[in-house]
Image (tube, rainbow, N blue to C red; front, side, top):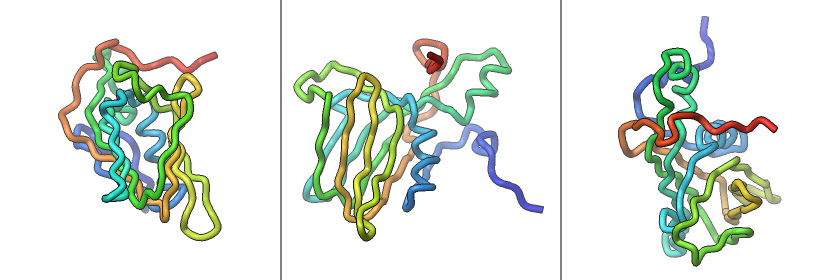
Length: 159
């Protein structure tokens, strides 16, 4: 009998995941939710056709276990890369304010007519970053060891 993987299967191993369709991207979006970064942690390279973010990712895969064990919630530095990017636009993001901390709410794909479309990062505070892509290819890779979240708790999204 086979069964789907669970968050616990990841344990303390670093994530290294790719998304090539909208369903894959939903998984990356859930893992990147509440990830925070500053403007200086975002890089758009037209020559490489790549948009990259260095985020402080909340370890959602460890959240339940941390809560049950009474230990601090963890974050990890991760690289979020959108490839095949043709253009980037933003709304509600002051790119001149290098100290503003941006928080990812979701990452979605708006499909075009062929394999093209837009990758949309929705940010807390009504901000958004939109990348026009030739084809969907997004990667999320942890690059540091987990550390205790400075706040000691997970964000609360209850209304």
